Figure 1: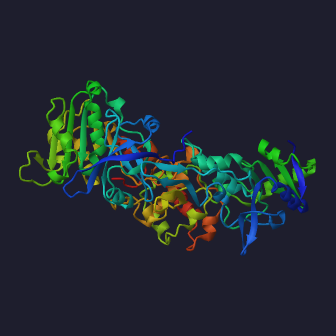
Figure 2: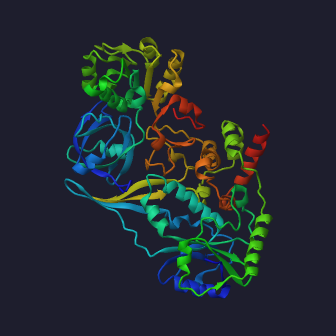
Figure 3: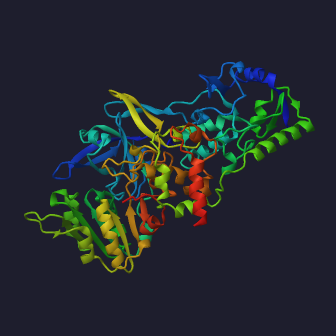
Length: 341
Length: 281
């Protein structure tokens, strides 16, 4: 399908039509910051935003969800798996870094054996990406292989060209979403204008450190005392993993009352000491230094061939860290001095 | 496709106290539904997530061998929330089981070779499964000489007493039991596992070694094996790491580029040395 255009003032009406048959998640301003919320009306949405405070990963991978309910009987147990019957989800206005976050989660959850909860949601979800015209001081997507207007992974992709958005129709799912809409085909100069916006944004945000070869350098420096220096100010709060669009670690536990209850899975963090502590008391990652090293190694060294880097450069961990621990600075120290060795 | 998070219901058939401190019990479980049992096809060295409904799940290696159909056995030390509750449970009560999970011991590689099995304390459970598997009539001829070294603090801490006795009465396996402390009437060896290994290990040539036990035993046994000329590619260790999902998603058991739950828990010593990871034993 050809690229389309939509006037900014028509987006609200478009969303109103969308929510008739879809559950639409979109950026909404609340308490002074943006979050992805299920919207009841297009007028709630504000696309004039940098990024949401939390990544929208919880739409596909909720912070807490029931895997099943159970009822113990005398000689058996009854197990009920919840059916996911929410109307087709649409994530509208999601930034390219967060789309890449969904791709990273997909690599984990869709690998065999597949995660049926994630799969059921992901297969139905339509992703409408929104290119970044400007970036904020925590952004570093271009460092890790992304870009402010990378449309990879989106079904539709919007680029701000003034009074209108150019809509790139990327997949059949995206095309389906527009089939009832009467949108103009984009004129050549608007396609050019969008390409210029994308190019400008990309140029304005140069890579902050060369991450090519990070696997070898980080592996070589695994026992380097530099990790101690990086970890020194970390208080182990775990906000970096909580906000990260690619962090997927979770715990599984039971909530029960007498003979019935439910098994839930709930986000967890490699930054917490109990994460790896065995019942025997043994803990292979018993210091903050080892846990920070785990986070950085997992993102930039352990799986870069198979899954791509587990960092999309969204910058939330940079912006929200209470002690200003900047992962970009850590990478600079590790990779630049490491490369020279 | 089966939902990998949903356990099969099983029933406790019997509970046996294994150790003198009563801290380790062996639970014999049977599937409540026959079709579930047919799906649960396992190899020695694999593990499962056991559910105590209302308390949660924890991973345990199968202590029974697939050559003994109709039941599963797990030897469980009372240590955390799930295991404390399990130790309160008795015959007839319902549990859940997810699995089998993990890779298991490399049986194919071991065919036609001598086998050296080295276990310590509570880490012996999956090695017991392996031993029973190899000693089963149809499998025994696939392996050459089998040597077993098994140590515990005191005789009262050795698991599977009836198996040990049966094996000692066989001529097709050499069994060396050792304890850290002498005890009245003890007829086995006294001393740590590494020292006994040095003394009784077969020729390193053409031998596959399986090791599982507490970290101190492993770290002191590996240098002995090296000294005796055992190749690191032919030494296999079963690692312990905290696990939850068992299917490579929850991130907990990640070491280097591996997930212990899916790529392990059995790794060759060569593989472990190649990993960039925190110390796992």
